[in-house]
Image 1 (cartoon, one colour):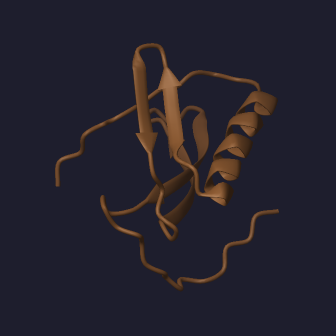
Image 2: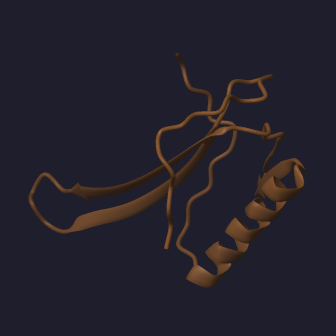
Length: 96
C-alpha cells in the first residue's frame, strides 16, 4: 500500500517543549477533540477514533561503519480512515 505523507516536521528541541506538545496531544485524545498539526505552510487536522491502535517502539540504529548509534523512541497512533478502531489485547503497556 503506497504511503502519502500528510505532514512532517523534524528538528531538535528541548525536552520540556516536546513534553508540552505531547501533553497537548494527550489532552486532545482525552477530550475526543481533533488534533491539528501545523508548521510553516503545512497543516493537517485528524479526528482520532475512540480506539486507535497504539504502537510504541524503541530502536537502536548503528551506522554501517560501526560508529556511534542513534537511539529513538516512537509513539504511533494508527487507524483505518473512516473507522472507529477496534480493541486489541496484545498485553498491557506500562511506561515509567
